[in-house]
Image (cartoon, rainbow, N blue to C red):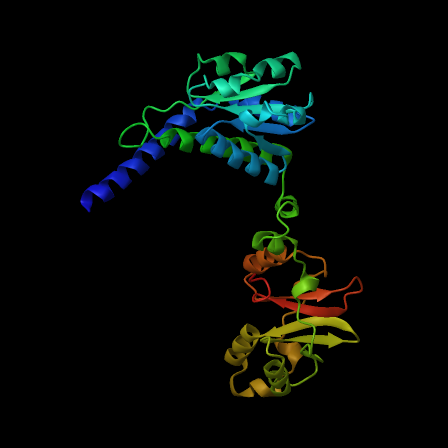
Amino acid sequence: MSSIIDTAIQCLRDESQALIDLIPTIGADFQHAVELILQCPGKVIVTGVGKSGHIGAKIAATLSSTGTPSFFINPLDAFHGDLGVIGTEDLVLAISNSGETDELLRFFPYLLARQIPVIGMSGNEKSLLAQYSSVHLNISVKKEACPMGLAPTTSTTVTLALGDALACALIVARDFKASDFAQFHPGGALGRRLLTCAKDVMHTDNLPTIAPTTLMGEALMHMTSGRLGLCVAIEQNNIVGIVTDGDIRRAMERFGDNFFQHTVAEVMTSNPKCVSPDTKVVKIDEMMKQHKIHSVLVVNDQGNLLGIVDSFCTMM
């Protein structure tokens, strides 16, 4: 059993060290690659064979979901009709650990003839892929984590990480936002959370509203029936304050036995946090964490109460 654990730990050590070794290589060539992608008016076509192809497909998916139109094409398919999908406004990201993969290099004349920029990723700076690329990114590793030194392990990890580094750099360069990300992920849980607004989750039935002149005994009954742990003080259709569990605890400490003789106006928090119906749930969640509150009021343009969003509403 110990040899199994030791092998697993060594694998992770080898791959993590390779990632650390990759850091000093991030420089002018990486900057050039990012600039080429930013300047590309078309798509980023990612290509590779075998394990490099699998990694390339993931890189293409990451780029596409973060604002860079991209898809993967297998070089073998390119020679059977798919070359037509590569246009003169596109850019090719070609991946080959050796840099000498024949199937990959065979359609380079097509790319060069049409002056299509190529970002090459290989572990050999003197390879044909490196020579024919517009810019070359070095993914060389000292050794594979595979105990036999044969299966692509460390090299594929480094390639994937460099692809992620490109995507992250492009996110910053494009000022890509969480709301933009949601547009590309509308069906998933993350997309739903990023796209959901206050109006989609707010409580609207039997809202616990009360006049600021109401005595606290009656206010407590309203809070209990409302089941939201608060009451909203309203005067002439205007929100003037909010009474929460925290307000009540502090008032009890301050007023002691005379607590029930005091009014909502003496206990409430004035100017409660309000949002519009179109405010995103993620924004509300950030607001509640920042101000250490558990609820916000949803109001229209006139400041009238429409609903209440509590912390449970934001747990999606």
